[in-house]
Length: 552
Image (cartoon, rainbow, N blue to C red; front, side):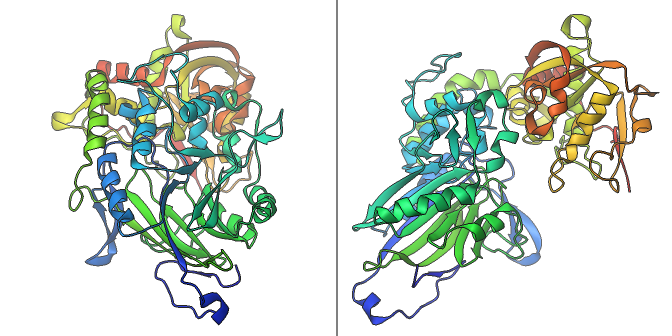
């Protein structure tokens, strides 16, 4: 680290002592992505960047898609003797139908074909639990759905790393904590880990027996091991990130967890590839290069390092986010096209089933109170699916905003398909109807502000309404007398049949009050309920946002 110069965007020339200049530095290009989320096809909308003609405005640029990313990765490798392709987690999970129908096997295969070498785990790698993550690594048929794909699934050809995810029974990480690669005889260590809050944002049942430890403490504890193995150059792949204010290759006023984490890292850490927040940035934080490449495969980050052959450390680093510009300069990669077509032949008949129609786009973006147009529709669909006595006798349905992954955008004449519905509700959670008292319901609503920096406002079904006071302290924000069902006040001691998805029902997203529910009755899946609702009630449009009210 003695002579390291970390650069945020453009390389600067640094003068080194003569001893360090006796041999030319070894150059290494790292290509990086994060938060791919199974977007084999270009995501709707692409990427939002500053307008090159007027930086005070934003424009949307079409970007992404595995066929184009593979081509860009090949182009970015050209002319570089030493390269490696890495990632910072959430490559799978919350995926579009084409990948999700096959439990993300197509995405693992696509990234393997691109030459991905190493990735950290993200929180979404645990969406189906530890055993499924290990299947992604090692291959084999799904334990419930079996072998669905056009060919056997042999697992990832890249290596998952999980330094901070510890099996409590053994004290060891569930997957290797790091991997060392050599470039012209110089070892470079890649440490991979996810955010310590993972346990609070995935289903508890899938991570039983696992502990997610502090990110900085985990990395710092590994540094002596790496140094003992002769490693001086250390790159961290971390599924945690920040919130910058600037464009995709800038980093003004970045905030968020990644800032404090990087500042706590041992000085031996040279470069940090981050993710999770779905933002794009190239930063200098505490003298280290820190990057993130947006989401859904819209960017590939090119990181150029120079390694001193004497000290074997990184002496300079620069990063640049490159748009996967599918509409202009990039051709489709034939191997990726063949893979997508093979899976599409199996999935298209299901994905293209007509679901109904909408009058306009149903947005997942909440208003100031926390209510969204799509959230209203999803909650209504879940209530409709569980209202009858045989289905649970529900009177209220609540759903978590994190489970709503994308807007529902109409095609010609307002038509939507099952694939559109599934994209908005891709976790395939079962519905659970349980009895909660009025007090327990209020307690659950108060837990929306467990993380004051990132409130999780539950979406509620028609007929139920409440108001919350932003000026009140945690635990006192919901106004009891403003909680009503069909115009009548919610009674603190009375029981109400309430439908949640099974993620919330076991305390997901910190809603532990839901675990107090009694007489649970399991129903169908959330995406199926939404599909049926569209078929029965189309065309559907946004309703007035009157269910969640904010004061102060």
